[in-house]
Amino acid sequence: MSAARGFKNQRGLALLTVLWMLAMLSALVIGLGAAARTETHLARNLIDAARARHLAEAGIERAVLALLDERESAALRPDGSRGIEFRLGGGVVRATVADECGKIDINTGWGELLRGAVQVAGPGGREADALTDAILDWRDPDDQRRPRGAERREYERANLAGPRNAPFAAVEELQQVIGMTPEIYRKLEPMVTVACLQAGIDPRVAPAGALRALPGIRDREVDEVLAQRRRSLERNDPLPEPTLTGIQRYAAQSANLAYTVRSEARMDGGAVVRLEALIWLLPDGERPYALVSLREGRAAP
Image 1 (cartoon, rainbow, N blue to C red):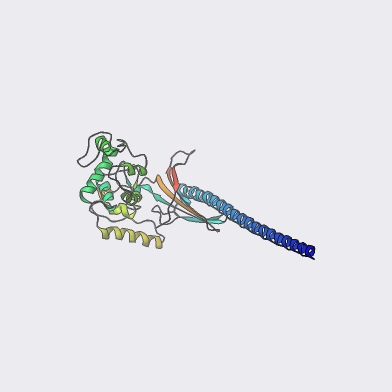
Image 2 (cartoon, helix red, strand yellow):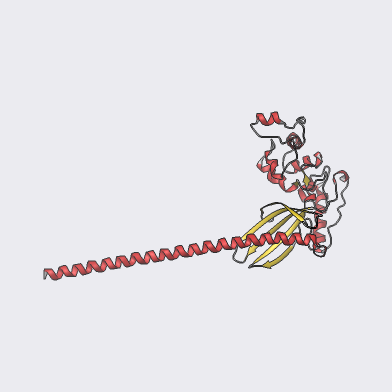
């Protein structure tokens, strides 16, 4: 009888061992299944992101082609308020263009315009004078310090590299100017460019910040210009010629050669990619345009 009880105990222990092993195997299979599903989901997201990236690049190319074709260029508003939209490869692409000559060129723009832009970005009084002079000292070829500016000695004292004493290579270089803060730069960046090469701005396509930087302009005048644009957009009319007084020195008609192209690709699966390209239209028949820069874009305000 004791042998029989021992046999039963062994059978019970074996059963428990088998059940425990089955539970472990089940947990392992469930874990492997979850990991496989996660890996599949991640792979799908990566594929969607890659597709969205290529579609956003296609949006840039499509917008440039529209700029080059007189039959299609009317579909684009050079202030960025209206663009083109198309569906391709499981996603929707939207692309707009903005004429760079609506912005203030930090290499060639009037000093008064630069000071106005700095004031719109936040600083006033002597702080605005100092930052404006520092920007002008950075871009000019000499070591003669402006009254509130900064040349090599001031940068050495602050343990900073600069100034270049040459034109800005890119708008991002403003961040190296003594006195520039991340907050000021964030507000200043949408108003300025290095691609227009003119002293003034084209008020027809200027963003609100650049318009407010015009010396002596009143807020109600800027508001009216923006309202006129909205009304013309609703009526599908061309951009209106703004009637602004006292800005003749700072107004310049764009040569329609430099543009920022913004493209957004939104996939059906949810992936979104935004790109911003700075392009130059060229008179060369073999090379109709040049891509100056390409970067990740931001969501529309």
